[in-house]
Image (tube, rainbow, N blue to C red; front, side, top):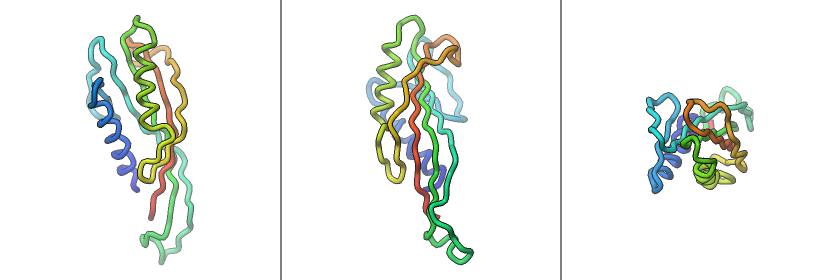
Length: 143
């Protein structure tokens, strides 16, 4: 499972969930996005961590599919809701994010229990109330 396969598997699940009612706009890494005015939205980031080999290969076994690596990462949901309306909207969206990935195995990706939600002050971008949920994961790649 390549890095891009892991990323697209995660992003496809997010896109499917938030295209369903209640619909929310999602900002993905390195994709142009304009935040909506006075409406909730989500920013997702995949932060890659340390990886580890699970098997050692020789020159003759490289590329045979006999080797395995573990890729670690963290899925970050930055949830933005209108300022001045309390934390309820952000917490409702946070619960959707948690339910979507927490303790899930999705193909060769295993997600840990979610961390948060926690409030981020000052929010970035300004003008919103920001809540954050993080979920660490590990994926297994055959080489």
